[in-house]
Image (tube, rainbow, N blue to C red; front, side, top):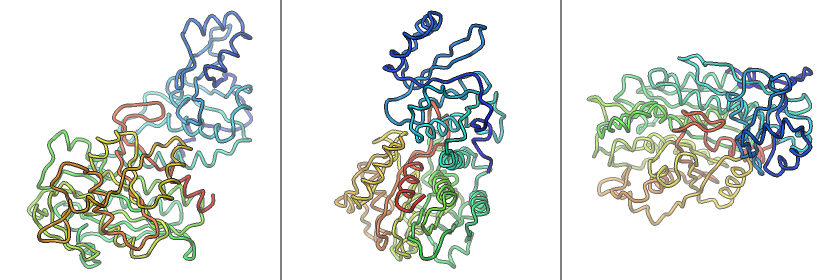
Amino acid sequence: MSDPFAACVVQGSARPSVRIRAVTAETLAAWLPGQSERIRAWVGGTGFAAKPGAHCLVPGANGAPSLVLAGTAETRDPWSLAELPTALPEGQYRLDPETEPRLAPEAIADIALGWALGSYRYGRYKAAERAPAVLWVPDSYDLAPARRLARAVTLVRDLINTPASDMGPADLADAAAAVAESTGASLAVIAGDALLDANYPTIHAVGRASTRAPCLIDLAWGSADAPKVTLVGKGVCFDSGGLDIKPADGMRLMKKDMGGAAHVLGLAQAVIEADLGLRLRVLVPAVDNSISGAAFRPGDVVRTRSGLSVEIGNTDAEGRLVLCDALAEADSESPELLIDIATLTGAARVALGTDIAALFTDDDDLAADILRHGRAVADPIWRLPLWHEYRSMLDSDIADLNNISESRYAGAISAALYLNAFVEKAKSWAHFDIMGWNPKPRPGRPRGGEALAVRALFSLLAERYGG
């Protein structure tokens, strides 16, 4: 994978002349009186008030850009300068030497990360209209962590943005193979009818209607005696809804239904590159939910890997079906930490919108740690209740449980409770229900595929396992 820093963040001895001065409303008010009348008049004329994300390009005496004033948040925020790579004219810029000393090293790294992510454009089919402006950072700053996270988020975005025509189950397996090859991880893939022989019946049932064979992707890395951390990601490469077919507007973005898989692959890449002290396993059930004579049907009963039988209440609730087999396998090893990530329910989006990852877990200490790291790195997460009183919503007359509730209430919670039924041995388990998509552009976060909770989870794992 290419280095997302390469074209937009540089280090070295050659300092560019145009400075970026990061300011708040308070620091701008303290700085302006000491400037020339020309600069004061220019800034006043533009109406620049140092709001986070706003900027003011100040010309020099010759009319060429000489200074950029950039509004920043009072708290740690990677996005305040993230619009500058495409808002500023092409060329190189550096942080003002008077600004730089008052920023902590992690704030400089945040700025570099936001700059790299603000430079992101998905370019597989259409070339970018311009090159991003380039940020110069002194060699004295360690940008390796920011570079690592930029690579992870870029991988997530690229995978989600790729249309289903070029991102089927086999393509997703190829993406995992590229991660394995670049990091030294091992990879195994079980595909097609071999899923039945290996006892992954639910993955097979969901994916068998497609001309593209379903598969289970299994990536592993780390020392055998290290703490076991397992990531499971929903890999529905395209979701038609199956026989309970989606309407056209509900199907339009279903290339993103493998967003959970993209997230765990991006997170895994960052974990391995940081050489954290854990034993990592990544499981991705990859399928198309298609329609054909072989499609599974509403009312069918499927026997899952765990032995539990599931009545199919709706074929469009397929994500939890493929996840339950992967979770059962992950849980069988009693990992210290088991995390699944999925674009699972519209109910979570109704509750939290598109920008916030919904978290479910019974482990209060784990929840507190995740939320703390989310706040620390400006990666928003909100905990929703794993309310076990709602478990009866999944009752079935003919099977151990139904894959969906008949009620329209608590859809995200009932989905989480379904997954929870397949987790018994893991010391701690967390489920993330995410959007994986920016419906509108924001600084550093263009419209399209997006990584949610990846930076927070990496921060958590780095704290727990070193790095």
